[in-house]
Amino acid sequence: LTSQMYPDVVRDGRFGEISREDVEYFKSILSPGAVLTAAEEDLSGYNIDSMRKYRGQSQVVLKPRSTEEVSLIMKRCHERKLAVVPQGGNTGLVGGSVPVFDEIVISMSLMNKIRSFDEVSGILVADAGCILEATDQYLAEREYIFPLDLGAKGSCHIGGNVATNAGGLRLLRYGSLHGTVLGVEAVMPDGTIFSGLGKLRKDNTGYDIKQLFIGSEGTLGVITGVSILCPRRSKVVNVAFFGLESYDKVQQAFVKAKGELSEILSAFEFMDRASQDHVARFIELRRPLDEPHNFYVLVETSGSNRAHDEEKLQTYLEGLMESDVISDGVLAQDETQAKNLWTWREGIPETLGKSGGVYKYDVSIPLDELYKLVEDTRVRIQEFGHAIGSDNSNVVNVVGYGHLGDGNLHLNVAVKQYDKEIEHILEPWVYEWIEKRQGSVSAEHGLGFAKKPYLQYSKDQNVIELMRQVKKVYDPNGIMNPYKYI
Ligand code: FAD
Picture 1 (cartoon, protein in one colour):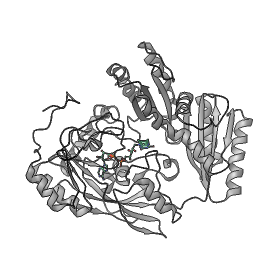
Picture 2 (spheres, rainbow, N blue to C red):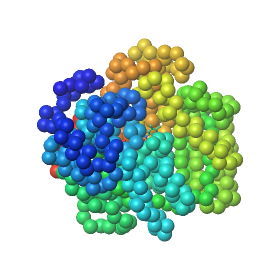
Picture 3 (spheres, rainbow, N blue to C red):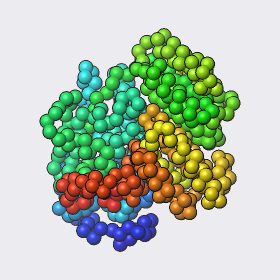
């Protein structure tokens, strides 16, 4: 069997086909309404990803409410060799969260309880299906913060965040989930429960198995619970937004930010002019700076002493102005202004999605060459006879932005509609470009289905073979999220 969507991919004949008895069994172990079938309702919301780029044909969606229910589901799937796709908020950007053929979707949306929170240590234990924004709100009421934030926070799950090792907007300050996640509870492909919900910051007792689940993208087991160390919420948050004329100056501003804002620096995001011109076409807000600039930077500080933090940020900005690093800038005067400034950064992926199709490249590159990829991409697209621009006509819009503080560029190529010719101009060229600079083909979005052919550009064959062996040990029948990167 091949998929209409992916003519080159063949359904794995080892997998069973879901039968009426399977559906009846799932109905008998799950709560009423927790088994959805294509025969009775429209499952497209579970079969199609958020970019509407990937589409599967799952006939059954299961919505467990407890770890025990997930375990019973997986036991059955193990016995019957039924392939599954764990699904969180379905906001992933690499086609990992939707089936390719008829894999069963295990939606974690009903597992959304906070299990415990310790107000002294800041350790939160919660179900995998808790929505990121709701979890952060829960913590805000207790003066704590979730150590991760990203544009899809209103829909993505914390289990999905852990499964993708999401990076986002606070990584510069709080580090990666590999450091902040203290424990993971997961159901293995044969139904065994891995109870690794540790709450210890220090635990050197051999292999740290939970680390394998962080970033495994549903290929090793279903994450059902997460224990995570949450920092105190900063009392004072300041946001500045400024314009610069060259990428070199963006780097100078970053070095100065690390030196002068040091412990209060919580975000350093950069955006190019094309990205901001694009956002301006879609949002009602007045642009933060009157004159156009080639680059923009959003700096956020988070601290505890208003006078101290504001003075630091003010001095930093004045220093940049005096040394001619920045051309113009604004400082948010209140929370609403700060939120509006963030819209110019967070609105980029959202508004780009409205133009039609977007080829997204989420890559890590050594900082000095980070923006060169955007420039070279524009040249390449023009060499193949396509016009570059940011208006609404039939041109290709190439934009660059990202978490500069983490060496993470988002190169986005927006087109009226997905077009194989443009795709072939870009791929594998972009990945070869990255390989030459020893970068990563996936900084934070993961590999999923989209980047399966490109893993070799970032990992050598020995490492890929080790990854395959790990997969075999955890999932000998290969039923966990098949056809994806491993
Ligand atoms: P899904 O999309 O549902 O799933 C993603 C992958 O994880 C799939 O492979 C799935 O099988 C697996 N998975 C999900 N839940 C589980 C589970 N409980 N157990 C096992 N496997 C599971 N990402 C960033 O890193 N940084 C950003 O700044 C960022 N910004 C974004 C902005 C927008 C507007 C959008 C749409 C996406 C953005 N993303 C970003 C990508 C995405 O939001 C993250 O990858 C997010 O962590 C995915 O969470 P989810 O719950 O939606 O997972």
